[in-house]
Image 1: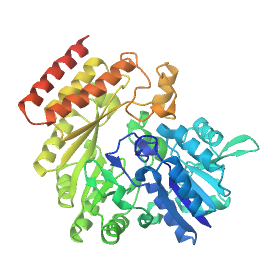
Image 2: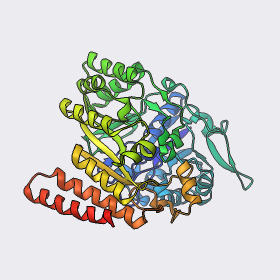
Image 3: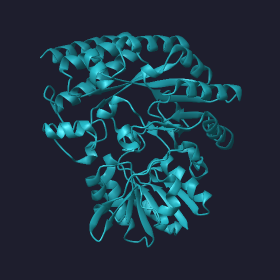
Image 4: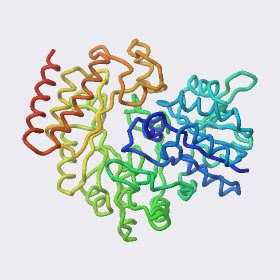
Length: 457
């Protein structure tokens, strides 16, 4: 069969669809990542003798009309298109329009697992079914109708959700079909242009599952690829695609320190020259591993810090992390030349204005190279979502607002306006702190005083 896989066009800017656990994140034009899920499915289809092509309409900046023209020209038998939470209405409308002229099977592909939203996708689009599970290894049977696991569909007007499916043996995955992508389109703000992504593990067992989308989408069980399998993909990226920048998209890249050491050892022994970035936790790092990562080409690390209030940090935001651990890792990273990107958020239930001011103080003291500040989003299906819903905190379920930078709720201590103000102020103050010059320093001081006054009200 001839299968066309489409990364749907975005509304205003490219959507970082595989971020926020795969639900989608409005990262802006500085974060344009390849559709790894489509590349995996394409590789599996090619391996089964099917034909496959990928159109990344989002990264290419195509309008819906331009994407439709390309789809018509392909004359495919099956079309698979992405649907992400923050652009769900645009994606569904796009799929609805495809149904007006496409005569083959239409399949939606999403990371959303919440049943009522999956039903909404089917009803608002022309999709015959929607994939929500890890169906890469059985995608040939999904398109033929032999496999229903990991999908939802309408059966005589009744919504049906088959059992989920996950890839247990991660080494059984094929290498993503990057040759079907224009790899020059992709970039990651912390690495630069011509960056690709890799995923060496899935799942996350940590207590952050209370609010985090990664365990919601990928499950609590951590599943990893062997160092040798990871190396095969790195060599393919470097030698066959001439790419030297890699963003590892694991929720916790160094979950198994021995495996992380082994991956680094292989990169070093093979003399592979790459620059890479990863995400992990402070309690999954140590000086020896960080030194090895730097030797293997690691440029920097995304660290989930969330809050500068030590009580919030240690009991709700990042259980297992302490300020002392964070300070140690930051200092060792600076000495080794490893950049640190602190992932911060505002809006946890225990937070107050004073808590958020403490986050500012932590950032000012530890001075990471960069930060990212999001507003806590109650992703449907997380324990936090149900708690927020029960307490009446959620102010809207317009899913287009669920991109990480817009307040969709309040807490007992903080209004939605407070959350928006805090997110903007933390970002602005850090920018001033990171820019050299007296004027920037003076502006940071003034903004810090304003922030302190706000926190004391």
